[in-house]
Image (cartoon, rainbow, N blue to C red; front, side):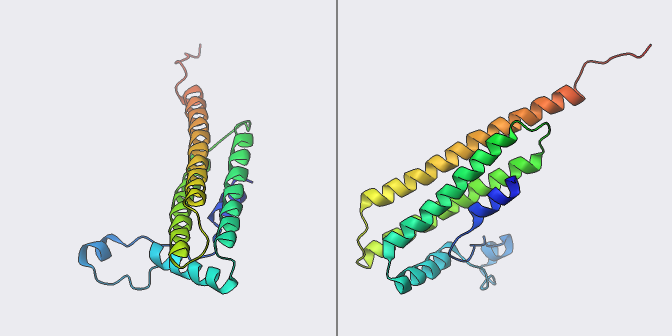
Length: 167
């Protein structure tokens, strides 16, 4: 369930940006097939322009993404009551947090560009959107920390128990 919830956070109406490799960053050569954040924003803006819905659609898409993050947090909190956890659970949440940070940038960059293009976009709406993503990241981070603490406690109980001599 946690994996499905984390996967839902990754869903976005644009191609996933890919960081440049170390070689590309050092040499500046190659990497023309990678998708940058600016590319993702442009693809998304084309979709928003085509739909004619502008910021209304952007806001709706962002709210869907934030709802997926809330479901992930809720699922992770339920997982706190499971008998066993793994570091993979934390890794999924941390990946979702990184995804939310990236999505925050793309949504706000697209919103700013829509404003430049004449769509009705208020600074307050952009600030609220940015703040909502920050809160989702913070909330998931706290949940991941609690889960990590539980894993550490479980490991210490299993592996660091006092030496018991068998007689």
